[in-house]
Amino acid sequence: MYVIASVRIALRALRVNKLRSALTMLGIIIGVGAVIAMVSVGSGAAARIEEQIASIGSNLLIVLPGTATSGGMRMGFGSTMTLTEDDGKAIATEIPGVVAASGSMRGVAQIVFGNQNWSTAIQGTAPDYLVIRDWDLEAGRFFTAEDLDGATKVAVLGQTVKESLFGGGDAIGQIIRIKKVPFTVIGVLARKGQSSWGQDQDDVVIIPLSTAKKRVLGVSQANARFVGVIQIKVASPDLLSDVQQQVIDLLRQRHRLQPYQDNDFDVRNLAEAFAAQAESSRTMTLLLGAIASVSLLVGGIGIMNIMLVSVTERTREIGLRMAVGARSRDILGQFLIEAVTLALIGGILGILLGVGGSTVIAMLANWSTLITPASVAVAFGSAAFIGIFFGYYPAHKAAFLDPIEALRYE
Image 1 (tube, rainbow, N blue to C red):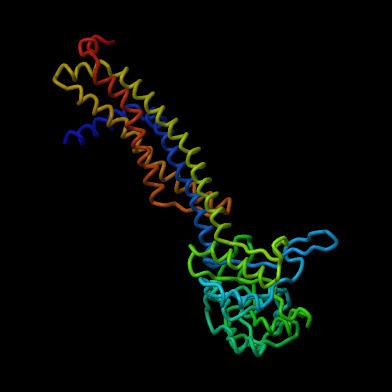
Image 2: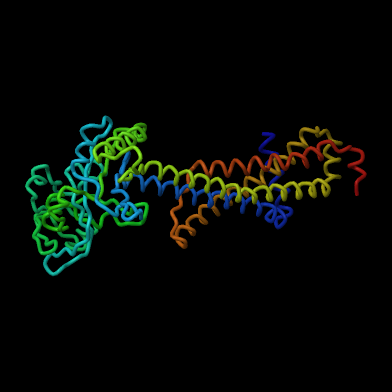
């Protein structure tokens, strides 16, 4: 009952000076709103990174063709073909912890169906590709080892290609032409979305690697076994570093590289790259939150300032209350509740401002934002703490006024 009565008195005191109270709360409103909006931007970036990891595939290693040296000049990765299908098979069979490994080649071609056509990426790969990429089928089936061995002219479409050629129609069983070669559509992939580098992963047609080499990408007989990249799925994130080193050792042995020679391939651990992005995102979130918290500090100082003014204005009232039996703790509680009430009302309005602000940022800047219950709770709790911290000194000053001096105060 004491607390309820104190809150009523506090609200009545705040209503006496509505404009002053509103201006005092403004600092808290802006502070809480800024914290929620800025943290939502950082959390949205972190969530986007998690989506990218899921879209690329978990526990993934990528092996790229290595450098070439000609006339003393070192050229970049991919400047020569140094990886073969047999390298991928050796990785899959000889290294413990590897779930699957698949060599693949990629090119661009025009796809034709009826009077519709579309330029897209052609991915020649092996049946394990969907396992490696954690990719599901929306309809139909994926090609098999028999399709790979027989260089069967079958194709699996990404969502972008399917929609461009068939719209809302059924693609399964239809005949499309890739570089004038007829292919039967046997499957449609589930939607993946954009990759971390902005590529539309659904804008692809996947065909057997053998078919891609013989019918579409035009690999010469001399390079018949070479592939453009080898993708490796590892059983556990804890094994990524160990498997990465084993892949390097195995490929150096298979390519007969001497100890003094550089690798003619590059093994990339995508988990490390995404971990670095995630760490940058967390750092950005903390930095934005810290900057926004300055507004909360300013709001707290405003509460202390206005409460000190209130104590001065109500000195005679405090003396009267003490004269009729009010104890120091009653006065302390009264002014502390006023300060906390100011902060909490400001916190509630700040939450609304933060939610609205993050929505506007997402719409205008086209950024991903994510408002979490934790960020709202922390911002609201910070407002309550600021009310107590900055309101304690004015409340303490009021509680320990000399009653006689307070009654004489004019």
